[in-house]
Image 1: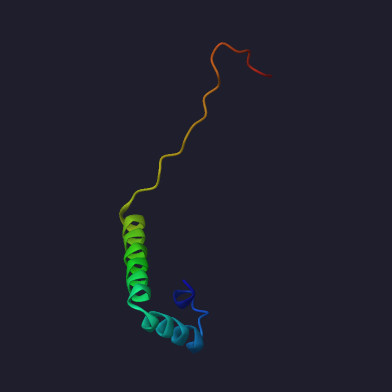
Image 2: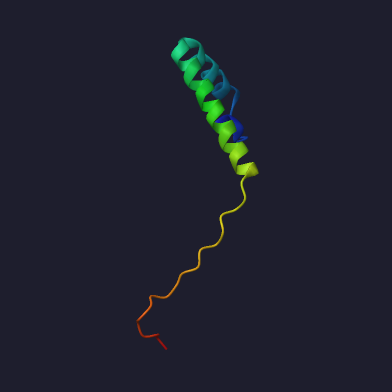
Length: 65
């Protein structure tokens, strides 16, 4: 997230590259996270907003003035 925020430093990018290079599990976790972020972005881009929910007054009760 930080790298996409516009506030990341070169040191942040270097730390990420270092972390990814430490183990194949880190690389796998990074790739999974990228896939998730892309899927979320695509879902948000293609979905329509949820319809507004209207509250109904309970039936059988007296209306307030």
